[in-house]
Image 1 (cartoon, rainbow, N blue to C red):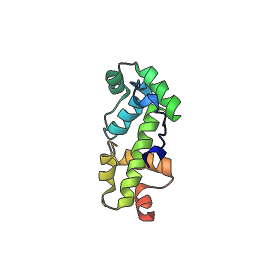
Image 2 (image 1 turned 180 degrees about the horizontal axis):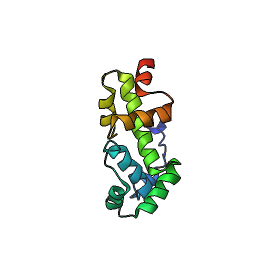
Image 3 (image 1 turned 180 degrees about the vertical axis):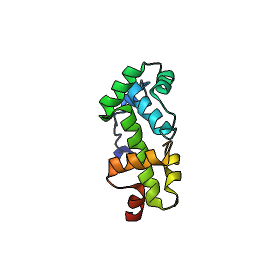
Image 4 (image 1 turned 120 degrees about the vertical axis):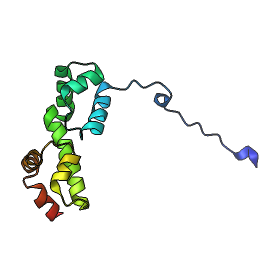
Length: 127
């Protein structure tokens, strides 16, 4: 019978209907996630993009990630390099360094080894 049906009230979270002001920090991390492969990315690029001085941007990045801007960019690059190395799609390790945003193979090797304790080649061979 239709009379037996119950109407259940489900409260709707009002946040999904209100304009959520995006936090600059979220936009900043999003921007870095999309642009870390650019070998020429600098704090002044972020300053232009967000209209905030580089000191503020630096301290925001440090506060969120617990890393300085260059360290965080290298962290993103190395994480992506590790992902690519595990696919075995590239045999040329220098190429991977360029893909993830390092401007030289020696810099890529140095930073990778510093972060992972082994060279990219050893990492690839162990994957």
